[in-house]
Image 1 (cartoon, rainbow, N blue to C red):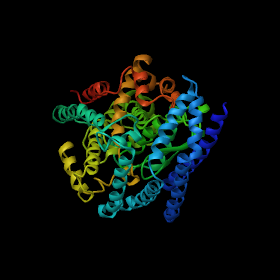
Image 2 (spheres, rainbow, N blue to C red; image 1 turned 180 degrees about the horizontal axis):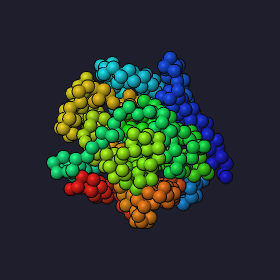
Image 3 (cartoon, rainbow, N blue to C red; image 1 turned 60 degrees about the vertical axis):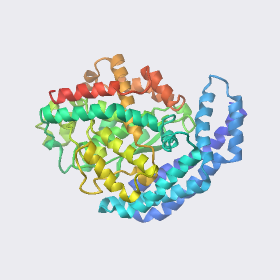
Image 4 (cartoon, rainbow, N blue to C red; image 1 turned 120 degrees about the vertical axis):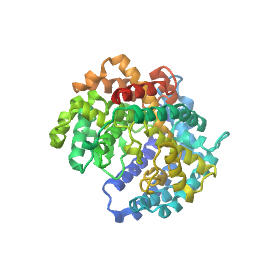
Length: 496
C-alpha cells in the first residue's frame, strides 16, 4: 500500500467512525431512545456532523486525496476509490459549515416534531420546519450549482448523474400505462378479497416470522438485526453491523413487506466485499440501485406465488387463523390492487403514482409554485387526480412520510427508478436461472442471492450507477421490462 493511500485511509477512517456514530445515534433515536433524550441527541448529532464535515473539507484531507489521485494506477481499484471519494468531497466542500450545522439541527428537531404532528394530525405544527428545510434544499442546490433546473443537484446527491428531466421522462413513460392497467383491473378484473390479511396482528410474532424469513433467504443475523420502529429503514456501521427496522399496520403486509424491503437494502450492504469495509468503496453505489434491490426483494420476490408456496405454511404455523387460505388465495390477496392513502402500504402498481405526487410537489415548492402552507391542499388535489381518492386527514396525507422532516428533498424519484431497474435485473435473473418460482417454492434462494451478489453487490461503490445498470442488464434504465412484468402479473391475478 502506498504512503499516500495509507494516509488517506487513515483520515477516512476518522470520518467513517464519525459517520458510524451518527448512524447509530439516529438508529437508536428511532428504536430505543427515551423521548426525553431528544434535545441532547440533537446536540450530539449536530456536533459530530460538523466534525465529519470539517474533516472532509479540511486542507489535510484535500492534500491527501490529491496525492492519492496522483498515485492511482489506471484501471486499478484505487482509481474507483478516488473517484467515489472525490464526488463526496466535492459536494461537501461546496456546502459551508453553517449550512451543515443548520440542516442537522433543524432536521433533528423536525423529526421529533413530525412524530407529534403525524400522531395528532397537526400540519401547522410541522410547517415552520418544512419552510426551513426546503429553504435549505434551495440553498444547497444553489451552492452545488445547476444549469437547467434547481432540482438537478438535489436528485444528483442521491442518484449520481440523474436530473429533473430524467425523473420527468420516467414518470411520463410509466404514468399512463399504470393508470390504464389500474382502470382495466377496476372495470374488468375478477375481484380480489384481502379481508383475511387485515386485523389486529401480534406485532412481535410477525417480526419474529419476518426475522426467520430473512434468515432463510440469506441475511446473516450474526451481522445484523431487525427491530420494530415507527418507520422502516436500514442503516449500519459496517457490512458486519447492518440495522433494519420494520413497521406495523393493520394489514399483514405492513411488517412482512417492509421487512423484505429493508432486507433488500441490507443484503446489498451485508454482501459488500469485506476487503472494502469502512473504506470509500464500501456499500451501495446509489439510492436508485439500492431501491432496485429493496423493491425487487419486497415485490418481485416477496409477493410472488413461488415465495409463498414455501413460506405460507410457516406463516400459518405462527398464525393459525390463516389456515383456511391456500397459496393462490393468499397470493392474490397480498397483491390486491386498490388505491390507498399510504405510500408504504401501497400495492405494486399504484405505488409509482404515490411517488409521482411527491416528486411534483417537491418541484413545485422549490420553484415557488406551491407555498408550504398550501402543501396539504396541493397534496390532496393530486391524490384526487392521480389515484381517485382524497385523504380525509393530513396524517393520511402529507404528514405520512418521514423524508421531508429529515431534509431529504430529491430522494423520492429513486423509489420509482428502483422499480424499473429491479424489473430489468429480474428479467436477467430469470434468463440465467430459469424457473425462479420453482426455486423459491423449494426454499432455494441462494441462486438468486448469489446472482445478485455476483452482478451487483460485490461491486459495492466501485462502478458508477448508470454504468453498473448497463453492465448488469445490457442497457440503461427504462420502463419496458417492469411494465411487461407488472402487466403479465396483474393480468393473471385479475383474469384480464
